[in-house]
Image (cartoon, rainbow over all chains, first blue to last red; front, side):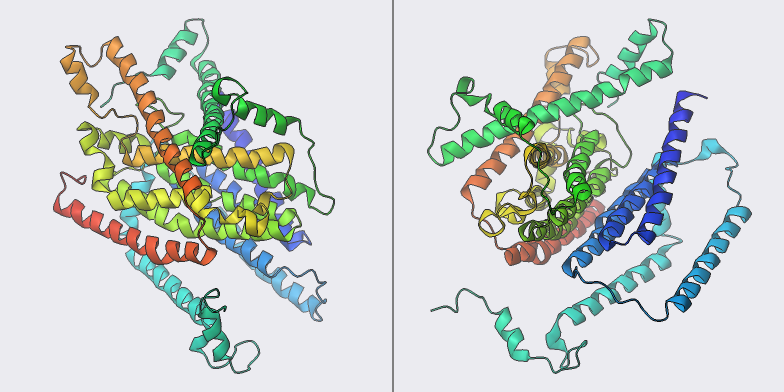
Length: 199
Length: 372
């Protein structure tokens, strides 16, 4: 085995182990904060796997989107609402476990099927695009994948408008969580500058 | 433009002369540029710390460090030694693992980003195809480290500082990436080497700052915000948050934060000079100088001259920007958190979007000036 192949093998083994152990940790650990940070580690290792596959653009995009945006937002949300209280055990824990197990098993069987039916070996390994992949991805996004790309952007826009409506309470007359009428005066006051009102 | 010193090739040929295989030669070569860049980054930090002390002293009409070495140049080394030998304290109620991992996660992405900083045609660690995008991706990891250390410190000021740092970093990353995108649009490439080469056709006149003045200002503001330098140092605002996420840190772990923030500042200055100020390019094209001296462009003298001028110009431009950053730090007041977020989302984001749109339009209208 040449040195390059050995290095690649070692990297692959370490990254796969980190992905597997990290993913198990995300599910099994009691502390939600640890789970969130481990999720970031899993995302990073997946990016490392992409790098091993010569897909550097996908790897960087994975880091930017999943680690830099998704995971940071998850951690952010956890830290903003992190109350130190013991959660009540739910009553229907057995049926929940049953449902989640069946969903996970279905997903697993789907993945195994894809693994078995797909032809993984490249017909011509010399033809792999490598560094050129950035250009190819761009071409595909603006030609044959244009519709899915635009639909995804509409979806994001909808989510954004929804978030703004939820955050701006003056749009609604009733509070969503409590059902009480929203105190419009409070909103007026809080949007005024704080320092000029004194004296 | 395929000329310039290729040290790696010469070094490998040299080792092969001793009968080593090319693979072994490559492995011996690999750590050398990394070590060199690491050492130069740390030396750069020492210089910047000294500059910061001296310039802040001048701005406040003091003398500044004077006794450690001539003009106090050894003061940063004394600071570093002090931090090195200080006791490493982990607060009793803190979360030990996250507390230790936080500073590492802050420092490592910054150092990794030096991978793409070129000091000359072949003088960089790796000319990766995704180039500048790698830096944008890596700099998005940093907020996780800040949140981690803020949370693990088990201190309300630390947590607030960490949350602020993450919010600030996320909101300034978007205009930053958009102004980089305008440059990439003009270059047709993400590689930092190509970005500099595209600017060096006519010396100072072809630098990107003339074609992207708005992008330059947006990028510089965002880079300062990403470095948490003073007009934007909300995460560690002393009057409000003690020292933000680094409140509970001491000794070497604190030094990692300190080192990280200064390496990040130098990195940002280097990237501004690469993206907008022609990188290693001399204000007068080297080809003209060679023609004036009647020397062929491939002669050894011109090669060494180009390489050394390249390094000097890159460092000079970067330190000019570092100087401006230091002056800004000691002469401007801090913005409030709502002003900071307003500036990012309501001003810089629309401006950088418009800049991108106008660049795309100009590229279609004048392909010879804005990259065809």
